[in-house]
Every structure is written in structure tokens, then in C-alpha cells.
Amino acid sequence: MIRIDILTAVPELLDGFFDKSILGRAQRKGLAEIHVHNLRDYTEDKHRRLDDYPFGGFPGMVMQCQPIDACISALKAERPYDEVIFVTPDGEQFNQTMANELSLKGNIIILCGHYKGIDYRIREHLVTREVSLGDFVLTGGELVAACMADAIVRVIPGAIGDEQSALSDSFQDNLLAAPIYTRPADYKGWKVPEILLSGNQAKIEEWELQQSLERTKRLRPDLLKDK
Image (cartoon, rainbow, N blue to C red; front, side, top):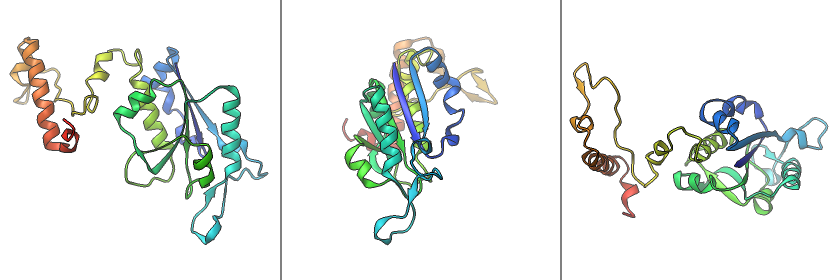
């Protein structure tokens, strides 16, 4: 089982997200635990503030060391952690390979930044990995943490009813997935490719690979550079 602890200044942003669908089912089956921690519960400030002005006269507000350190220390006192991940635009690009890798871990902390960011000393001394969803900036890391948790948990064996479904997703083999269709076979004259109705599994798999390669070459040629 994997345990994911998410540290945030705004836990309300994540209310209900992890209780539904595949993530909720995975937790009920004992495959995963996801816990959201309010960093304000760990601050020593009587007004429950988490931020202060940055040294050097820079604009914006910065999350302080103390509440983040206190929360991580409290969690580490209860169990060891494989990774303490800070989600940040200048981090390592999150992808399917990383999701697969992290799904094999035992315990993970995901730290969400807010305001202008966090005191850099946390990144220097407590964070083991920095992860980004892409070259853009959000108001906080909560959406990133939610996306990461979803991608990580869904590939755990048993989380999805049909495990082969996850294995055939885009990016699992550095290719985009082939087109998929369902009933009816003819809708408004829009027809499903005949090969998919043939029952010839070998030919269907050959078509699937050809389609994956064609779509990847057309839409994401960068994925083919190592092939």
C-alpha cells in the first residue's frame, strides 16, 4: 500500500477530490491512503499565519520554514518517507514514467507551495525531489498534488478494474494511445474501422501499434526521439 501525505495552506481546495471514483475505491480497498494536512495547524503564529515578507525587498509573500518543518517532522516521527516532493514550476517534469516509479514507493509527502513560494531553506534541507506539471505558474501546488496522486494511484495493481486498461494508456510505452471506439458501429454514417470488428486479434494489435506510431509522429514527435 502507498501512503501520500499532502501538505497545503489551503486544504479546502482538495475537499472531496480523493473520496470519489478510482482514488476513493483504491483507498477503500486498502491499496492507498491519501491524507491532507493543513499547514496552519503547525504554525507557532497566534494568527495562524504561514507567510512573511521576503528578505531583499522582493515582491510577494513567502511561506515560512517553521510550519513546514514542524509538519514534516511530525509525519517523519510516525513513519519513514521515501520522498518529500515539492511541487514547483521549476522542478523536474512529471510524466507517466515518474508516476509508475512513485507508485512503487511506500510513503510520500507532497508539499504544495502558495503565495510567492516557500523559504528556499526547506528545498535545500528537507525536500528530496522537485516536480513540475509544466512551464506555467499556478496560484498554488494543490492542483499539481491532486494530479500527481491520481496518476500514481491509478496504476497500482487493483486500483482499476481492468489493469490492462492502464497499461495501454498514452505514454506507458512512450507512444500515444491508438483511437478507441464503442457501440454503435455506425453513428450518423461515422463508422468504426472495419478491422476492429473483424475479431482478428493479431491484425487488430498490428493496427493499434500502427495507429499509435502515426498519432505520436503527428502530434508528439518528440516522444519518438529515443526510438
